[in-house]
Structures are given as structure tokens and as C-alpha cells.
Amino acid sequence: MADVILVLNAGSSSIKFSAFDVEGDALELVTHGQVEALFSAPHFVAYDRRGEKSAEHSWGEGAKLQHAEAIAHLGAYLRGHGAGHRLVGVGHRVVHGGARFTKPVLTSPEVLDELDKLTPLAPLHQPHNLRPIRIVAERNPGLPQVACFDTAFHSTQAPLAQAFALPESITKNGVRRYGFHGLSYEYIASALPDVAPDAARGRTVVAHLGNGASLCAMHAGKSVASTMGFTAVDGLMMGTRCGNLDPGVVLYMLDELGMNAREIEDMLYRQSGLLGVSGVSGDMRALLASSDERARFAIDLYVHRIGRELGSMSAALHGLDAIVFTAGIGEHSKEIRQRVCEEAAWWGIELDTEANASGGPRISTASSKVSAWVIPTNEELMIARHTLALIDDKREGASA
Ligand code: ADP
Image (cartoon, rainbow, N blue to C red; front, side):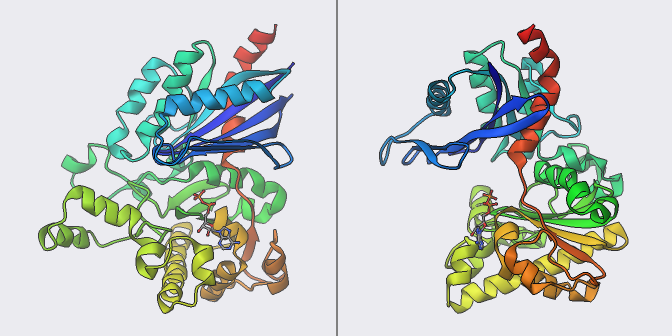
């Protein structure tokens, strides 16, 4: 009977899942999909190992589906399609591990209580990430579950890179830079030795450009600095998040515009970035296809901000040997890659236009001083690998 690891990535209104067959140390994706729009028009869709749709269900406009019901539906799908398979562990994406959890961890009631305490550091994500762990534990008390953190990869950063210039009365509460997208960066770090050995050993900036976006400065595969800080709103301009902002603007919104904390949060997280600046869309594809002047300005600003932050990351590395593009925009948009490489040409990046058009992996010329790459990220596989590593003892015990 084949062993299977389930990976869950739960947000406030959606649950993404992937299931991997375990063959010795190898993991193979067998199905993936999601339940989305849980509280407005819940919809479940799943794909098989060939990427073809294998199941779909809608609950209808206006229906509301609790996380527990969504997980029950997912469980029924997996049981129905998993003949001859045995679920041996569940890995979860958890946004915040705080100062204590610098590695993935097997969950327990005590661990979950500790992770609950980090909710004030990531109120928009942490509770939603933790809920499915408790739901699965209730339904399957013996099933090992592993929490994998977006912050953990950045725990190698020096205290200087993590500090804010604030008094201890504030920083003692855990107010410091943590960095996010860590599972994506960890996956890229694991792929670099095969794809780009020099970049794996050297000073490399990885650009994770999805709906959320950040840069990570890596030296020899370890995180040295990141554009995201205390929260995932810092750094680059994103789909709907503003990125780096003078804190004086927040005070202005409070004092002069009479906005309250929730309104400001909504402004900074959901109404800004590409969406706010363009007034058209937060989706890069839509902006690239638009002839609207403001869409063009939003893209110009997006690229300009990456160029500026690339300077900051390279300064933290004392130089730059390679840049890697990943996530939705980084993997699929040759225009944005080209624009970023042109913006960074003064670093010695020379784009190979043909290689860029065909998607790489190497998209810089052979003589380029700084090499440029495209490497698709795979956070789910990273979570599955961590889960397998932590449940291995139990798995051997179970099959003995
Ligand atoms: P998430 O951060 O939610 O996982 P993704 O990594 O899938 O998101 O990235 C989503 C972004 O990628 C969107 O802005 C989308 O427009 C963009 N994107 C996807 N494909 C393309 C493409 N072919 N050209 C330009 N942008 C693209």
C-alpha cells in the first residue's frame, strides 16, 4: 500500500491542498486543488497527476462553508480517489514561527498553544493556518502533523539584519524583522546546486514575485536579508499591498484622514500596490494587457521598486553574483524579467533575450557579470519533504 503525504495551505477564505506519493525518499505529486471562496461562493476543484480536472463541486452563490466542512469534503475526495493509499502525515504551511520555531515541528497541543501566541504578529494569517491542524487532529488523533513556517528560513539572518531602530520597550515584544516566503526560498536554495552551482555558492538575490512579493539575499544558500520585515506588507510593491512605506503616512491617515486601524489595514493590504496605483487590477497579466496610462505607471513603479530593493539586498551581501526569478510573475512574465534586468543592468546583468523568451533556466548571456535565472518554486513539495523527514520514525513504526 503506497504511503501518501497531504499538504494543506489554509487562508482566511480558501484551503489549497496537494497530495504526494512517498516512494522511498522520493515524493510524487498525485493530486492537488483547492476549496476557495469559503464564505461567498464555495467551490472545490481537484486535478490529477497529469494536471487534468478530477473533481469539482460548487455549493452555490451566497453559501458559507466552514473550514471543518471544507476539510471533510477534501477528506472524502481523497478517500474516494486514494484506493490503495494510506495517509501517513499532513504538512501545513504556517506563516509565523516567531523566535522559537526556526525549523518545522511535529504539532502537539502544547506546540499549537505556543503558535496561537504568535497570532498578534500575523493576525490575518496565523489563526487560519492553525485551524486545520486542530480540525485534522480531532478527526484523526493519531495522524502526525507537521507545521512548516514561512519565517524559519530567515532565522540565519544576523541580529543587525533583523533589528528595527526602536527602543527595547517595543522590541522586547518580538517586534523585529522576520521575513516571509521562506518555504519558497528554501525550495530555490535546494534547487540551486543542480541548476546554477555558482549561484548556490555565491551571493544571490531571489525575487519571489507572486501576488505577494519579496526579495531574499542569500549567501551560500542561507538567508542574509529579506525585503519583508515584521509583517508581509513591507518591502516590494505587490498585487494589493503597498510595500515599503514611510510610517509617517500611517500617522497621517490616522490623524488627518480620520481612518481607524482596520481601515488603514485594508488600505495597506488590499487596496494598494498594483491595484491601488493602477486603479485597474492587482493582477500583473491584466495590467500588461491594459493600455491604460495608470496601468503602465503601476508597472513602472513595480519595476523601479524592485531595482531599489535589489540595491539594498546586494549591499547586505556586499556584492551580487546572481539573481533568480520565481513565483507567478517571476516564472511567467518575460516582460517583467526583462524590465528588471534592464533596471539592474548597471550591476552587470546582460539579458539573453531569446533565453528569456523561452523561460530559461539561465536567461543571462554567457559573458554577463551577474547571471540571471528562472526557477519555478514549489512550496508544497518543500512542506512535503519536511513532513516526510519528521514523520519517518513513526512511519516505519506504523508499517512494521
Ligand atoms: P500567489 O502569490 O497567490 O501564489 P502567484 O505566484 O500565482 O500568486 O502569482 C500571481 C501573479 O502572477 C499575478 O499577478 C498574475 O497576473 C501573475 N502571472 C501569472 N502568469 C503570468 C503571465 N503569463 N504573465 C504575467 N503575469 C503572470
